[in-house]
Length: 181
Image 1 (cartoon, rainbow, N blue to C red):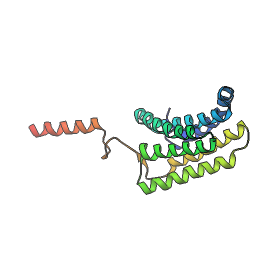
Image 2: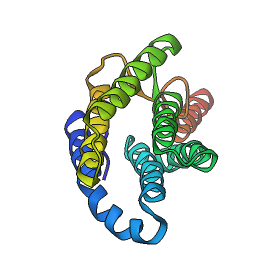
Image 3: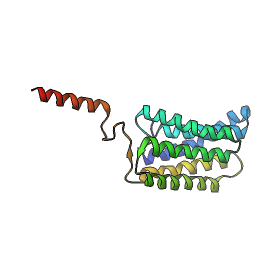
Image 4: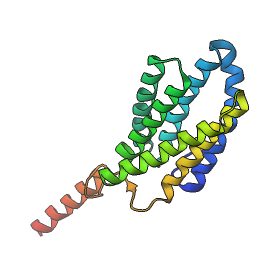
């Protein structure tokens, strides 16, 4: 399933928040609640990035990049707030750097606004306990849904002209056939 539209991204936000209590219960007893939260932040960022494009290959590649960035923050610190920052950076780099195209300045402002606002909203909503963290996760991903309401952002293709490689090869073959005729 993909969440590359406003409505689907809202559904992902609700799912990400709702799944945390079950994950905390299952993984928290094994690795501890703080480590489980860090793991959940890394995984939810990667899963979110994977579903941002209908092309599965692009989504998986971007998700691996996002997971690597967020995991680097998780390995460097035990503080879930810093891991959340790393996960947000991973989402921004993957979303605007790998999956969608926009001018560099516009992408930077968009990501800083959405990710910074999402982190601030999550900080405002978080309270001690599992439900407070679930609400914060929902709030962060809720604000990320706004990405699809911003105009002028398109999906990145393999070819800068917007044509995939097979279509380009087909067009070149047809041009060669027309030259011979």
